[in-house]
Length: 533
RNA sequence: GCGGGUGUAGCUCAGUGGUAGAGCGCCACGUUGCCAACGUGGUUGUCGUGGGUUCAAGUCCCAUCACCCGCUCCA
Image 1 (tube, helix red, strand yellow):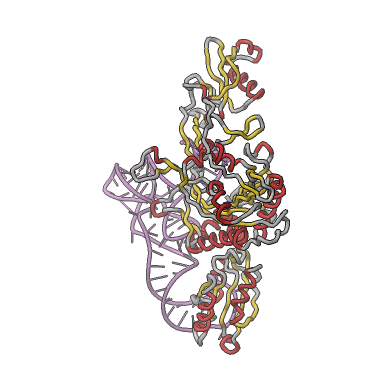
Image 2 (cartoon, rainbow, N blue to C red):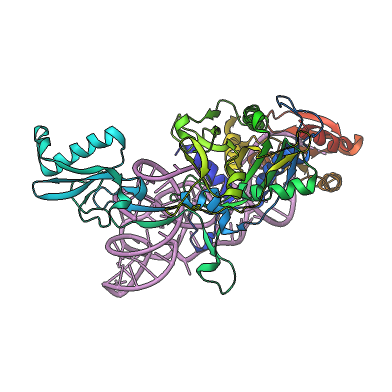
């Protein structure tokens, strides 16, 4: 971890941006609390997102780069939802894995991802496991079987294989299993359940029948409310529904400060459009969302828009791009995801009506169980969209820009953190965009006499009605400036002797250190002007 | 879950078995007319937690928790 990251973490604690959760009890892995300044910063980020994406969105004209004008509305749905939501969304299956550990290699595998085949040789019969499939898997198992028996390559005909590569899930006991990275038999532990979703229970007395999950994403609440929104808000395609809220995932390894937390906040949009237009809308949202970060101050040199490779795509997705930031705690050249923009097709709406879908022979269709019934039954409600212009009922396609509020907050903190030399002293400064800065303006009487505090207090009271401003009369003026630099306050207003005679104050800029004189009554409009940039 | 490291004041850290420390910060008073000024005084600790060894443990031992690094995992 770089020196800068340690210093940033220390600053966050010292100045009240971020604390470990439940710290007096020793902390809790994967959970973090936002202090007085942190809550302002994160709220400013969420407010900027809500305003830019939803409340200040112009429904009448197409924004630059957009194929058409579109509408945006918001939603705030419950964290605990009907368990069937997660079965149809695919989270239940994907998040509910069985893992096996290898006592010898100390490696951990997903039970259903380990394959292998039975072999008989020299009077022994055992299962050679591997993580590799296809031709490579055959070769790999052959090599490892020979090695395990101490045979040479030319003795390969002694191996009698029983069947092709099959999943480890078909093997009842692991006594005779050669683990993928093991040299002896029977080193794998029995499969153990991994719940990546937080399980909870609805109803004070309920047992397993009341089992439910804390949502692992906010998106599903939007899908299941799609028809409610259409029926109640007069929106017409294309339109988007946005939501900001907490989500929960039992990450196996919470790491890197708040980057991978078990409780985190998302800012998600589900944008619904006609299937024929969805590629254009996908490109629009990719670019729009990338620009949002650069507009708020993330340097394009540390930010990248990365299109997923084809084999990286979810089975339902026709395109996904990540917006990634080169966090200082990552090795050089590596990036961490801030936001994913996914083209989800009609997977979600169809799944919530018909039952969980899977790609079978290249086509999305309802996944069936052994008895030929849907693996996870849908709601059966027709939640398609009816276009009364063309008299057509269809599943809209969905573009999903899904952003992490905590990761965004962390990225802006990392980007903002600077240490620089000023006249032989180190100045620590957070160069936060004024819209994000927890405190917009500090109001400082130069000295505590001659009516300066009184005038400064009047300015403070006036500005505090609309903005987060801070009054500070403690210590020398230079110290007070540095205190504000360290928490990212973009402007300082200082009331000095001249202020008392001509009503002007100095307006000091955090980044340039320059000061201009303005009339005291112009301070509020000056701030408003700069916050609109 | 495995291996390595760390844990002492708000922050950074010193303290190798014998009285709990420094710098910075913070607070008060005085001073102070623009970039971490100065003086005086003050404030801060279950030495991560629990147990053990010892006359005596921040220091040695065991356990445990949290964090950092590397594996593993990351729809």
